Image 1: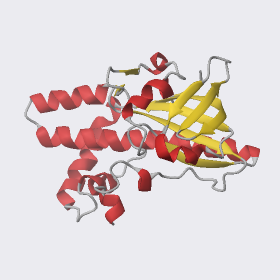
Image 2: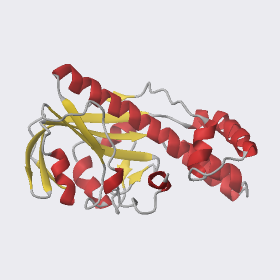
Image 3: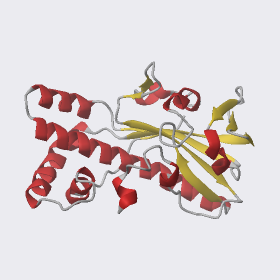
Amino acid sequence: MPVLSDIPIELDAREVVLALHQGKKVPPSLVSETRTAISKSRPWMHPRALYAWVSVREVAGEKVVLQPANGNQHVSLNLGPHADLMTAAELALVSVVTIGGELNRQVDALNKAGEFLGAYLIDSIGVVALAEVGKTVRRYAEEQAAARGWGVSAALAPGSLQGWPIEGQFDLCSLLPLDEIDVRLNESGVLVPFKSASSLIGTGRRYRSQKVGSVCRFCMRADTCWRRRK
């Protein structure tokens, strides 16, 4: 199963702080502290991405049926009312990305030492870093689709798309050997290490977009997200 490990992570201190402050005015002193925290945390990030291409056999009601390339039994995903986002898909890219568990261990150590601001900044940097790893997978999906003259769907994920609960990761991640990147699912369907994420991206000739889009309007947190209030 393909694994990407040579993944550059570009982090801008001001963008990290904007996310922390939900788009509000950024204190210059915090930008400086965040820049220092970024430098400090880089050795604790070990970005990797595991992915597989699967055939989309059927989209029926709220379910998407996928066929792994190795011919194993079909996997049915209950995406909920927005399963139609995969209607145009012929192939789908299933992926799990991670930055490993070392950064979280460092955050725990800082919290125990009473260094709460440092822990908060580094934890937040980890969230942004994970998003950067996800961008690498989305670009790969776009490139592969473009080579076929196809388009792409938005990136869908259990726990963020309305109607597709976090427990959906059990079915989605059954398509990938998570141990190859030292990731596992806990009993609640959450990926461990916690700075890990899964996604499903459809590709096909009937998609009009060449860029992997967002499902912000269908997100479970759409009503409270500061980005949608901007």
